[in-house]
Length: 288
Image (tube, rainbow, N blue to C red):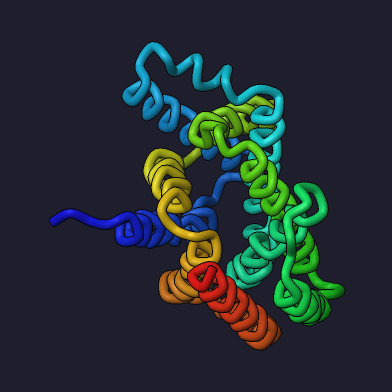
């Protein structure tokens, strides 16, 4: 059976998010220190994605890396920072807090595109932004004076840097995203290796790290980054919200971590805001 572009995009996006869902749980299960976790996460994903490029482009793989240019290097550095902030956030606050706060990245990206790429931001984006700011403020207010504030702050910083990455990728649509992510993993590994103990992992840590670095990260990136080729941006944003719902549920199911009440309340408002914004944007795109 032949699939049309829309169906192909849905399959790619949803499959990628489903594969990415265990990411937070695996970080929770790995007992290694942050630097060691970051080293292997970066190194394994870099090696896997580079192997994918070699299989796909053979001798032209080096050209794919050269073609990303200085802007691609900047994006790779931001990707490495994103990974660091994600791990720090997961280690210092609840998984639900991290993913709920991260889910606003596409909305921030729309604002960045207006400011730096001179793209039009409709009134609904500004209304949604107001609701998002209030929701984030409520979630973080509940974490004041606790260790959660470090993780929550890292998650907000992550949403902003991820928005910057999305904006730069939009400005450089010809860039090979797989090559950029592979380079970011290598950069991350090189930066953190002086602080890491790469061979201190236990047997279970090696298993979880292998699943994370060799399967979850490269496969999910390969699928989710292909989805925007076939789907409009608002629909991709709605698919990405699946992780915000599924990952905390998986963590609760496996290790019993319940989302804080403030996150449930603020997160419900935030997710509903993003869903309404995405649906209205999608309908607007269809009408045009």
